[in-house]
Image 1 (cartoon, protein in one colour):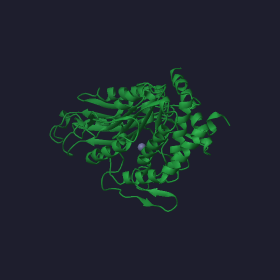
Image 2: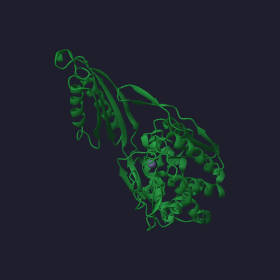
Image 3: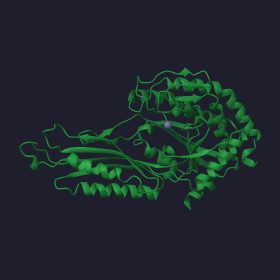
Image 4: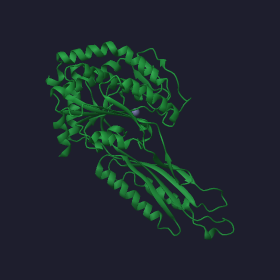
Length: 419
Ligand SMILES: [Zn+2]
């Protein structure tokens, strides 16, 4: 047992306070789950952002809803479209305190309006409902942990920035700037509230994730009368797709997946447009650079065909989050803190990505699965384990206590990022 894995009286007070708030947390998560916030349901997101701001105003912090900048997508005609989403919730507290934390989460879900609604009690300590685990439950955990910490004796030792985004499930393209800005405004440690696995395990190293859209233009011509005058964008795209898939297995941990091909019109017209949409994953910065270079090289080859032009859109929107010494230091501190409340927390590497990748890329070490325990996320069987609300809120409150009283040295862990 070390200092972190022992309970102080302040820790015990925090645990008691959270246990008495457990039913309220659960009720709040269910009410929030009932409000649809699918990533494209802008009306629903706007309505929910007000509810969220109201709830977070229980904190001793400045709360504001910040308009998110537009972000670009490539439509099926190959043109750039600018999309606007709902506001980002920002909160700021005690920016001059010696320890600074950046807390993040998202309020969108993957479920469009009318596709998955209502909370169902599965009867075995689990509830089924949209976004209950990912991550409205996590937002309730974040809020309760902060309220509890602020009711304790160390409030003035920790300041924080909170960023809650409307677009995590579609890549944080509108909110990545806000995440980076909050992380860079002096944060030592990041805390993000994605769900833990139902077993309790949390995410360790994460790969980086890229999305690319390559638009290829050729020249249209009548396929019967003047085939030779045409330049087929689909033919160029087909060669490109085979080459992209051929990159799999070429470098450790790097994968490519072409998910969508669009283009062409009628079978009697040489197609003058093809769009190839694909994703890539890479375990570290060097591998991500290799993947990006490979895409550039294959694009250059495709557009070296006579009559073929085009453009590449996208890239690594979430850089890799490997296990470096700073990350390992956080994981062992979280593990020891878990021991204080009888948890034996495991950290498992994953190919999945989240806002923790963005916070890491901004230079701040972080733990990103501090939310509730749950499973089957992104499916209609999504569930949350009800007892995990109090358990995980206590874990977060205890981490804040340790950062505040120095048992966990946030500035020292942050300094490990630099070497
Ligand atoms: Zn999520």
